[in-house]
Length: 185
Image (cartoon, rainbow, N blue to C red; front, side, top):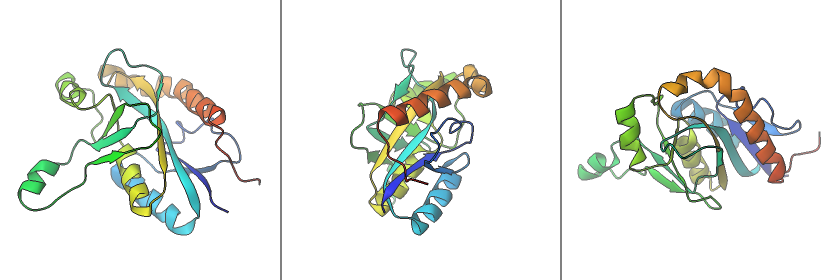
């Protein structure tokens, strides 16, 4: 039976996922997310992937939950690679989103200058979303990205351990309200 796979980077972000959910905790970063999700998709029959997690806000007015419509990989030089003949995909459209753009990279963003540059292209920043979107695109599995703002992608990002539980509760509430179905155990 095809089912929904819930994917989170950390156990802390998935702490309140409803019991019975098919949950994959990948570890932090694009490589870990890619490896873990690919292994799981090779072994399972999934109709959908829902990536839950925290994100830094790249604009001061962003707070709460977002369901991005676009995810970009911000730390790859796709334009430079294309200029030398290597076309690289660094942007994925996601159906059913709210219009926001999520930027993914392996950098934990706390620098104001870096935040400002990313804010020109995106609304939020995380460390796994683009990797998960890329794997899902390759396997032709629909994906939903759900991100809870945990910080302002500045020095407040260092407070993540103190705010992640509240974000995890909001993410679990979203899963329940969205009617994500789980297999019967």
